[in-house]
Each structure stands twice: as C-alpha cells, then as structure tokens.
Length: 469
Image 1 (cartoon, rainbow, N blue to C red):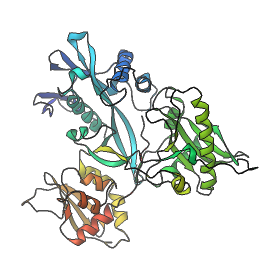
Image 2 (cartoon, one colour):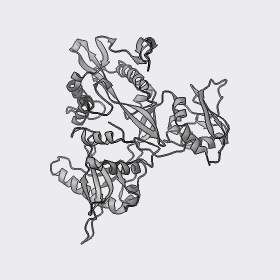
Image 3 (cartoon, rainbow, N blue to C red):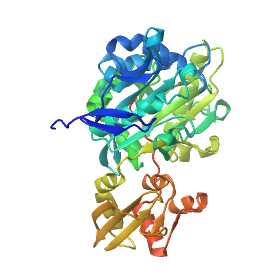
Image 4 (cartoon, rainbow, N blue to C red):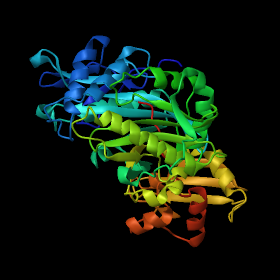
C-alpha cells in the first residue's frame, strides 16, 4: 500500500486539528495541561498492568482496594509478544508529564476475525478502557478512540466491537447489537444424582495440542448455530490453550469429554467466577450423534465434585454452575427443568463505520436469503432512512447490485426508518423488525412488502461470540 500524504482532520474530541499519516493520527500528541497521548512501549508493561489492575478492580468505579489480578495477568499476556494479533503498540496511553509520566488513561485494540453467516470480516476489539478517577471527564478516552478507530480502519477491519458498561460507548458511534453472556444457571441442589449401583459412562481429561483437530470440529458444532461467531485457526487454538497466564481472565481450561473407551463426545471450558461465586462454563460442545442428556448430567456431577475440591480452600464457596452458552444450546434443552430461567442477556456494542461497505461484503448471504423466499427474484430498491443518514440497496433479479448512501429529498424519503443506530440491531440478528417497532415508535416500514423484505434479508438469529482476548 502506498503511503498517503500527511493531512489534517477535525478531531471529534474537542475541535483541535490532528495530523494524520497513512490514515492513522500521528502520535505522540500534546493534550495540554501536561498530558501526552502516545502508543505504549514494551517498558510500560508493569506500570500499565498495575494501572489496569487497579482501575478495573471491583465495580465500575475502580475504587476497590485490592487490584484485579486477572486483569493484571491479561495485560501482561498482551504485552508479552506471543499473542497472535496484539502487542505493546496496540495500546494507547495518556501520561502526565507533571507526575513523572504516570499513566492516567489507557485502552487497547485486540484485532480478530469474525464471521457473518460464514463470511469472514475483520474486527477491532477495544478493551481495557480506563482512566484514573482524578483525570476523568477530560475527553481522554475520546482522544484514544479516535486513534484506535483509525488504526482499525487502516487494517481493513469493517467492524469494531466492545463489551462495556451501559450507555458509555454509544457516544463513540456504537450500538448494542449482539447478544452477550446469555446464560442459564444450575444450583448444586438441582444436580441429578447417580442411581444406586450406576456408574459414570464418561470422563474428563485435560485437552492437549494433539486434540486441536477434534476440538476444532466440535467448536464448529458449538458455533454453527450462530449468525456471528469467531473461527479459530490452529495458531489461535495453540495460543488460547497454552499462552494466557494462569491468573488471566482469558486463561482457558479445555477438557475433553470422552467415553470410558476414550472416544471423544464433546469438550468443555470452565473456570470459577469470583463476583457471583459460580463455576462458569463458557464453552461446551457435544457431538450431535451423542446423548446430550447423559453427557450433561455427568458433566454437572463432575463439575460439582470440582467445586467441592475448590471450596475446601475458598472463603466463599462456589454455589453452582453458570452455563454461558448463548440463548440456545442442547444442554438447555436436556436440563431445562433443572435450570433457572434465562435472564435478559447483556449485549455487545458494535460499530460499523461504513455501512454500505459492510452490506456489500455480506451481499452473498443477503442474496441467498432472498433465493427461495416469498420475495425471490426481487428487483428494485430498498431505501433505509436512519434520519441523519440514508442508504439505498439495489437489487436485480435477487442479486444485490449496489449499496450506496443517498440524500433524502424530503423527511419521509425512504422505505423503512430506523432511529439512530438501531438498524445495526436488525443487521446482526439481535432484534427482529417487529421487536424494533415495539421498542421504537419511529422505527417502521412504509409498506408491507418492505417489512417482508426486511424480515427475509435480516431475520432474527442467535449469536454468542467467543471473543479473542
């Protein structure tokens, strides 16, 4: 790629002009009042790990006395140099020159690849966003988001996604548009017991690197029901199995579930959740031809035994199992009567900086949805009016031929209307058009055929992304 000339752009954080090189804001940048924004360096590792452990401890205030050792370990993992996509230069830091260059704000980007109905696309994942309480409400995070958004765009990433506190990231162009942490719980008194004289038909053993091909086949089963998911390459499997430090929030404990003869029937990844004292199952895949009920009940008994072992050294004992497996999973069906009802899940914040580019990218899936539907062979336009921006999708005999912005000639110039960024909820299958209509009175389709077309092109579909950390 040829180098682009330096240019000046308006910074969204306060009106100053920002120098750009190759589409990325030039750093370091003087923010005034003794503050400097720069990319992190390898020598920042310990100081930044300590900063993140303090800022991200406890609740959202960051004021709890004891630091979060899982965050400290995760930060050091990202700095170490063996992460598949992320290193020190993927962090931004704001330092106070008047306080011996003390780090007062920081965040990072973890680049990764997700898929939409099997179509890969790049994602920049902002994470570890934090500011010292003494330096908040000065726009420091906004300055850093300007930088990491430009970095993500320079890498060709079509989407940015973050898990974060309520409302906050909406001010940077994000919309809650993908299910996060949908789960069901089982408390120990509901774990099914073995009948007298009955023996377990399965066992657990730690997964090894030699299991990667089998793990990946089962992971594809686990993610196959999702509209949006993250595929794993062999390199990603190797890192996630062996790279994260033991205390890191992204440390994994992959266990093979197999028959007593050693035949694999599934795998599970679990660890204790400290904040609610549950044993957290974040991945669980069972091969389709295997008995889900028998495996699930065995697993519950096995995890209860594991919790009893851990509880001998815990001040606050683990209370049960939390299955974080999305809104739908075979284990939910198998154990339905023993599980607590699902609470409303949280959501990923997603940002799509160039909606026409993303829609064109997933065009083959949109065409496939039209084919064989009630609107098969559709020819014509679909005009999406988001009130402050408008987009026209052009179809010819069911083929998506163009997606372009258009300028509304009158207020109601459009076939369907979506306030703010709510169209992203429809795009990523998080909400149906009917659900959006119910929640937002200014979301509607002008005619029945456009409502039908939107239902076909953008049906509600479950997703539970296992993000790269």
